[in-house]
Image (cartoon, rainbow, N blue to C red; front, side, top):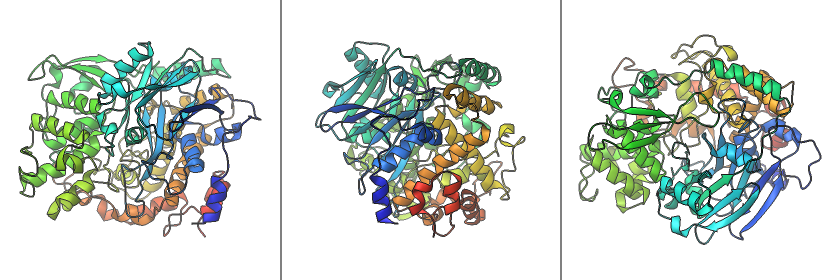
Length: 640
């Protein structure tokens, strides 16, 4: 790495003291900078318009800021590590569905590897209401640095920001914290992003929970915990201005009409995304078949809890009507990763799945990382590598709800030897147990994949194993469903290597665009993507913004993330070898029995690097790749 080149790059300021270019529509124009060490709060300007058009917002702009502002040698839990909350230009625009996203971005230690011992950049999305109300409060984003000596929360009320004492909230779970902060702020309608006990205790997979139905996963909660930042609360009444409101309304109307809505209650009777994949993670990925997984789901009562101005209605409440937890109302998010992470993979099905999914959300901990780590421990207990003395009397038997709930609390508080090792993820858990346990792990660079069984699908797996942000890849192709907007009218052959890398990059680039624009990708199903691009053009006033530019924005965002990891030691070896063995084993049973991506490796990875425009030996982008994407300022990191 060219250290002089990086030092020169690091010295540049991307937030101007005075903006010289007109502010596009869709932006509030301000970022709040918070120094928790000194308590200083300062308003700063958004970057100039050419930079905004390159990155839009969300993880695109946040990663770009982090590249410039993260001091060399900083670790994830160091005070100097900035945590960035960032919206996109469509967030809160109000005329379109799915424009609800904010991102949390930071260097985090949820994934660690020999090449990147300090961790990886993570950008986690959350929908709901916090993102729009951050915009309504007058800010596009927040940059938090430093660390407070005592717990605090940040309160932003219609453009006025202050730090408040949060010591009385420390130890509360995320849902309790949301209510308590609203009461303390004197506004029951304030929107709150906070941490639970997992974030306070620096669990690597701690989440940032925003509203009971939403969370930003992948370790941002540990960064908040290290900074003693318990919560951020926002409220405001300021409007997000659109340059062409008529065109924005038109795009939004078409979008709403075409959007594939959730079918209540029947869609909630299934096992979630595993229903579409036709496979589940059961008993630490030892099986793909679990008939009891959703037993009784059809008897529960479901209430949609839609996000801001969205008609898809993904989040919901589930009132349990049978069993030990009858009468309990679980507040659940759009995805079903927690189902497989905290329940199916540990042998638990039925109504307890919904109950445990809320328990782990309240603790503020990602179910995927917990599930892959706890799964190793359960299998080790079953096979005699762990005994009751090591587990402090707990019998780790598949399907035991009480044991899993107890273990969740122990992990979130790093209580005991087992709780402490599971808190650091599946690879660390297997290493601590020793023996054959490493052969039973499913991990990606130390962290966990998103807890669905992706193994039968090449593009899904390619996105997983190239991920470095805690197992939530934005790169997936079209082997589950076609995408006419992107030139794939029919779903592709899930087992065909030819064209798979380009397909995966295409799907990933458009997903990166949605995160930068402030769009939830669940809301982009049903052939509506062109309308989302039209909406960005309308809100910003960039009338010539089109599908090709959207794709280019997404690819540019991906390249900056990759450059960040190159800076922190990534090499192709990370993708080639730092994967839990079981993730690459032939599928043990079911309709996909015997299939494995391993037969395509490493060639499929080389295909992907070539499609990205990287040198396959070093992973560095070629100069022409950087030039094509307008990233010449990173030329000092290019392949020779």
